[in-house]
Length: 240
Ligand code: CAA
Image (cartoon, rainbow, N blue to C red; front, side):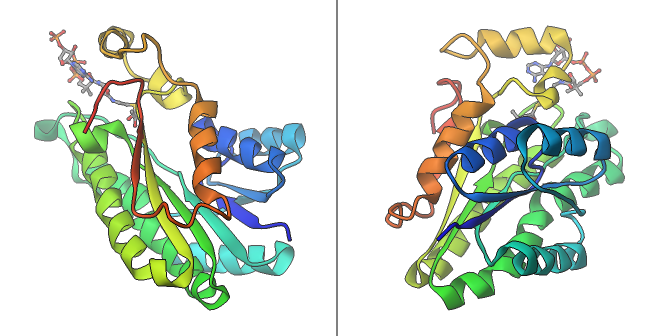
């Protein structure tokens, strides 16, 4: 049986490599995107992975999309909550939109997506959920009170849902990537990026495939004993 996996924000950055890694491993992957139609269509054409657009911050859109995907491809057994944005600015200058946008897109999206897939997973007695957090939700970061709060929130969410779901054959885990070489990190001012790079013991930014590799481990059928975990993949930059 081919399991269906939904990857939010699955056409760019870490999400794109997760989509490709799961596709290559034989899963039926559906990659979500929001506004970047041109990029998503290019991704679909290059990889053969179907793409679907909806806003993960919108509960009804998540619900409708999961139903549509289930109708088209089969029930969603695997969910990777990866979609995320940054609106970096120090708190004393942070407008409330920068707070709400990040919390809604990065954290409320976890509720929206999990709430729609979890009843079916419970009925079927199988599910794998991986929430993509961040080193900055563990360690904090200048200019990221919004992002760090959302990513730290995901870790508590992961543990609570893992407890609720363990008796039903569902695992819920989090991965906290460090600074991975994606558009999001490339957008950090060069001067700051160099400071960050100098603090990474392995001496380089991560490769998104290194995160995809860990996702594959966590979603395996025989990975049931690993739940509620937070896996840090950050080149040794932060050890909790
Ligand atoms: N680490 C270390 N020092 C930092 C820093 C950081 N992340 N961010 C800012 N600083 C330092 C700057 O070097 C600067 O120090 P000096 O005055 O000694 O040169 C000082 O803080 C002020 O910085 P700016 O001049 O840039 O001030 P600003 O108000 O124009 O901008 C900022 C502040 C918005 C925080 C901006 O510096 C910035 O965008 N920093 C990057 C923040 C960051 O790391 N974001 C991560 C994005 S990637 C991501 O989030 C993915 C993930 O999960 C890891």
